[in-house]
Each structure stands twice: as structure tokens, then as C-alpha cells.
Length: 345
Image (cartoon, rainbow, N blue to C red; front, side, top):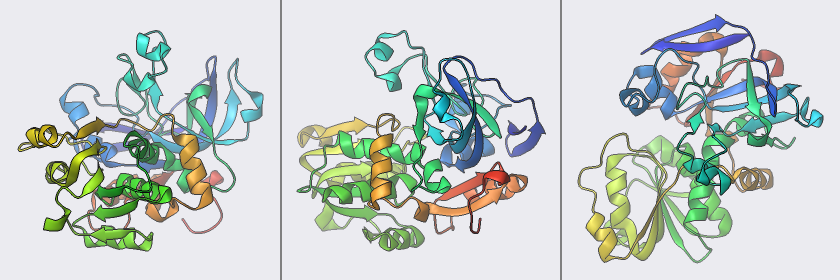
């Protein structure tokens, strides 16, 4: 099979390697689409905090957003999965600690994340193995592209849930990227009065295309005006703005990941206004709810895709990922052309 190898900053190769064998409880998946995100860009250009902190090192197979078809099964798995389209979360946990026993696998201290954290290879290969209990079946109503976007966007549903958003809430979403647009659509589906803030005109145009209200940034009247604020960009200025926007007694979800400490973060303001702050990691446990939202038309993930590149144009895919002028946030790579859906790439 062919697999992507990231061997050094800005150094990508596609190598021929032996396919993996599924172990007990695992299935073999032929990957059709791989999603690229800001984490992958950080690995590509060498700026990733995972590299800086020694949590990941070259060389490795990147990738953690994917969709594919089950083509083989290890012992103890459901044979009816063969031939099914699936995607899955990227956490691999110990199964022994108190967090795992309590079902809090996001908090397992010994977890790894394929293509991101620890030594396990990522999904940037034509064949991967995945534990059956990490998988979600993809219904026929969802495109391959939407299936590949479930991994990142399920975290947005998690953020909305953590904030217990209701139809009576006024919600601000900071950042009109993949996470922000998914979070805003989810909040809107609940009936909340939702606004997306992003300085990028192209990002705001996409939000408007999705039927969302968008503006360039907070106005004076927006300060302390929102019951719930979702910071979805990781931008330091946006992180600081979230504190200014949330009302007394309100809630903030930090969904984006700043890659450095945020100077000037007003922790005192959170205390004085009795604000609840949530850090949101992953969307494990929210995939089925997100699939339902996509099936119903409440959340449009296909509109977030900028372009699908063939595997032989991997360098161009990462160049596009780094291009801040693109109109849509997601860049995908097709790993197996035999599994391409009808229609243009």
C-alpha cells in the first residue's frame, strides 16, 4: 500500500509499505479521503507544539480525519461491517485507568492519538486498522467529504452541549473556520440567536452562504452581551475577546487551541462576572448526534470543503492548506481513487 511519510519540516514522501494486519477487536479499513487541518499544517511546517514539547517526532505517518470502507476484520468484530463506510475517532486509550473505567476516555493519561500524539501512525495511508469500538457507520445520505469532516466537527457539537445552549440564548462564535461554522450551525439548530465573528471577509461570506449572521468583530454593544461564547479559532486576540463578550453568569467554551500562553487573558473578569469556562477536547460521544444534524440538513459540512487533491499532489494540498486566502476551510486528499464518489473532485 501507499502511505504518506512526514520526515522533516516541509519534507513529504509517499512510500510503498506493507499493509497492517487487524488485531482482535480491530478492522482493516481502506481509506478514501483524508482531511487536513491546522494540526497537520503545524507538523508540516515544523511549528507544532507537539513537536516542540517532544510529544511527536519525525518521521511519522500523519492524518487523523478520515473516511473509508471496511475490507477486513480481526477476531471479535462484527462481520457485517465488511463493505461498510466508516469513520472513527483517533483516541487509543489504556482501558485500565480510573478515567477509562468511568467512560472518560478523553482524560486517559496514557492515551495516544493516531497521527497526532504518541507513536501510532496516522490515517494517511491507503489501509489502516481501527478498533471497532472507535467507529461510526456512515449513512448513505452523507457524502465521503462530510464523513471525513465528522472527526473535527464533532468537537463543535461537544462545545455546544457543554454550554447547555438553549433556544433562549444569545451565542457568539469566534472564528468562521471548520470548528466555528459547525458550532454556529449546531447552535442555530437548537434555535439560539447566533452570530459568527471573523475578520476574514471570505470566511464571513461562507458563514452568510450557510445562512448565519456574520460580522467582522465585536462592537461596543456586544460587550457582555452573550449568554454563551464559543472561541473556535485559537487566535490569542479572540481568546481575550471571549471574556469581554460573555455576560454575567454566562458560559465560555474554549474550543480552539492556542499554541502559546495568552498574554492579557482577563481571568479576573471571569471571576467578577461569575462566568463558567470550559475547555473542550474532542467530540467523542457526539458523532451520532452530529450525523443526525447533517442528515437533517441542519449542519452542512460539504460546504466547508475547499478542494480535494489526489495523493500524487500532496505538496500542492499542503500549500493550499497554508494559503490563508482560500474561501473554504477544509482541504482533503483522496488516498484511493477507486473509492471516489461520482462527480468532480
